[in-house]
Amino acid sequence: MRIKTLGALVCGCLSVAVLAPSTASGQATESTAKAHSIAVVDVAKIFKESPSIKSQVEAVENELKAFDATLGQRREELQQAMEQLQTFKPGSSDYTTQEERVANMESRLRLDMARKRKELSDAEAKIYYENYQEITAAVKTVANYNKINIVLRNNSEEMDLEKGDSVLRGVMRNIVYHDPALDMTPLVMQVLAQRLAKR
Image (cartoon, rainbow, N blue to C red; front, top):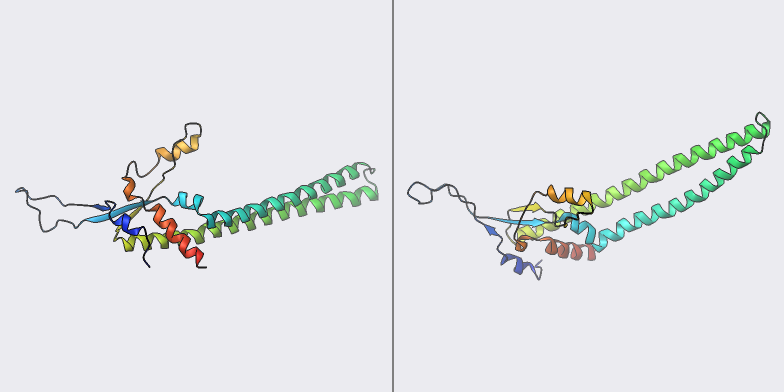
């Protein structure tokens, strides 16, 4: 399927010639490598800006918020049970019964918290896994259409001096500079959006 703006990328100076050393006479040898086409893609940007991915992640976050709200209610109940425990005489049957009730409530609360957080963590991991597969498939589509041999991962995030982790990510970038015409991120997002719309 042809994509409207893919033609623009073809004209976007994607060819980078990789030449083998020439002979002493200045003529190219038979081993001269053919030109390769290179592009970059910002996967992190796609994850941040794709409406479909954002809505999936928000659904998991909303479920976590809803669960946290119920946890707050259960913590209050536990607190009330602990306060009630203090009203009983230690060693009495009422104290022992209430002590067991508090212990059961506390252990159930911890267990439920651990289970739910694992469930939501797994759900989030699945979202990222499945969408990464979709992204790589879209990258392949754009690359094949434009006869691109190599697609490098890029990070277009601007460094923010106020945020140390942002600076660290910027300093550790694999690509120090690239011609903006090599960035295929918008096209990948377009292909991705078209595919997700068909679901």
